Image (cartoon, rainbow, N blue to C red):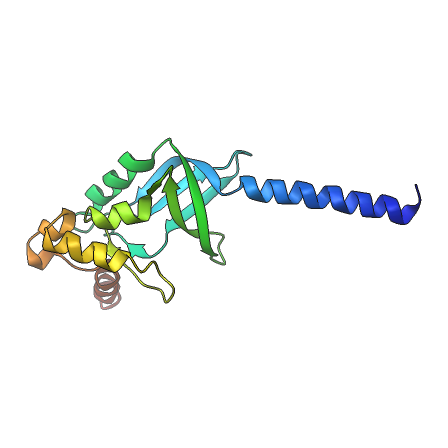
Length: 167
């Protein structure tokens, strides 16, 4: 075998290895649920993957319904094998993803049960706003709270940082 054939064979083997490794990456076992829209999982190769659920925003832990949203996500996915459809990765390595547990679309479930707002970042899941509207009309989850306590997380964070910076 000449040098160019050996290099070509090594390249083909590397490509096959990379492809199969990449194909294995989207599945992982959930080891931590930080809040209603963030979790940590371990890949089959024991790599930690930090994930934020795409297309939604759950109440912060200190907000009304925040701990219940975290509990809802925990009950759905903790210690279970999930599949990730990564939408983007932040510069800090956080994967923004659509999360699946078998046939269950977890992002859908969180909005449907009233544990999160549909949050459209331009190319979001078009089903989520209608699921949010349904949860609102049926007063599921956070939509059953008194109106004064239903504050979108992005507004709550903004108000909180304004109060802290004015001290």
